[in-house]
Image 1 (tube, helix red, strand yellow):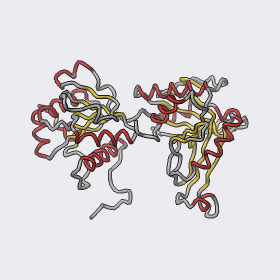
Image 2 (tube, rainbow, N blue to C red; image 1 turned 180 degrees about the horizontal axis):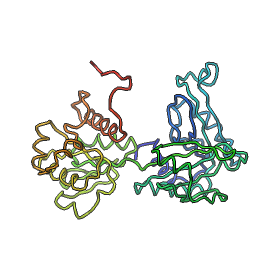
Image 3 (cartoon, rainbow, N blue to C red; image 1 turned 45 degrees about the vertical axis):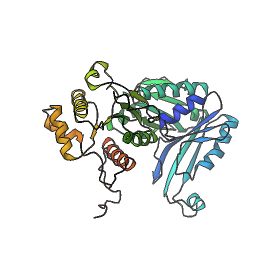
Amino acid sequence: MLNNHSHFSLLELYLSQADNFSWVIATIVNKAGSSYRSPGAIMLINSLGQTHGLVSGGCLEANIVLHAKKVFDNQQAHYVEYDMREDDGYAAELGVGCKGKIGVLLQFITAEHQTLLLSLYQRMKKGQVSYLQQTFSSPEPQSLNELSLFGCEGELLITTDKNNTQSKNTALSQMIKQGDTHANFLMVRTELSLTKISAPINLWVFGGGLDAAPLVSMAAQMGWRVTVVDHRSSYARQSVFRHASHIIRVHPDNFAQQGLFQQMDAAVLMTHNLNLDAAWLRLLHETNVAKYIGLLGPLERRGNVEALSHIQDSAWLLQQVNGPVGFDIGGELPESIALSILAQCHSVLHHRSGLALSGKFINS
């Protein structure tokens, strides 16, 4: 996977090198005002001073490494705040534009932490949601190095805190009920952070032509897991789709028995064959798992594919199928078409409008 910032990619990298170095994990546990990254973002530092991931736009990382050296020395967690709201403070010194404050917790990763992080990684690989609890302020400094992992219903799965005997967390139950991705709460004189950690997005690309290669590569760059499906021998070659998590060679007529649609967030149909696109669309309708479906080609072609699919559910076709796929950014090359498709897919999966952040219409 090409991504260097998502939880899944960072844990994958850490677990592959865990025994080669000592490690510190830095986590944003709270913020006020504007910041580049949100609470829950992590960064890994090894004992050679090498870093992976970002908790800012790159302006704080060097200073975080300095704090990490202290954590390596005494193997004790350390909490540091960066306040960018003061004109004569840290923001002015660094010349940054963000006017916010973030709190970063640095924790020394022990063998117990490694076991917990492995469990978190395995849950993400299975498509499961987890919640990570960290203490960043406490009268007992040693508690700052504790991690607790909860399941999607708020049940305690594993913890490095030997004094943690709770099977349920009331604050977490409320957080899950409200659909929040992060929350801070106070327990007696202890401040804690709770972060929702979801599995990486699973994108399925039906059609392994050369024009699909940039789409797969860009999606992998964002930390998505990509499956390429094509039964044709000259398509979906490993040498072209090096960044795909899986390449499946199967015809849609033989696919139903395999039951592989369990983990799918999005699908893009780009076989350049009307009958194949129609067959895959019919299977996507039957399983109804994908939250986003993109269909390559003009509007007339979409009508032909839908007719060949024999799907009678017109409401589903209207709501679920995005065709012609992508945003209108004036792209003709495979790379710009991939950018257009992924931007639309990303906005749908994250429940965003896809409009300009300025609130203005572009080129209006």
